[in-house]
Length: 93
Image (cartoon, rainbow, N blue to C red; front, side, top):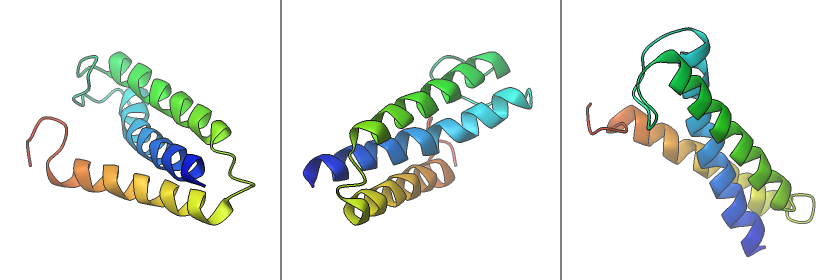
């Protein structure tokens, strides 16, 4: 159960963080990221986050622990969403 919770939380964080970067990349908008603020670095950062989150989901064994894993995914997405909505990656509100 611990594995499903931890990997589910990681997957939620990674996918929740990857989606806005991917969207900003494909819409050619600037957005701060680790790789730079341009569209291409954001596309790469978003794609990487989504892929890593998918790998964490695959390793989480969610069929064995659907409730704890699912709740931890939702909590991960909520936490990264609150992070971006409140302080953001570079401390700007």
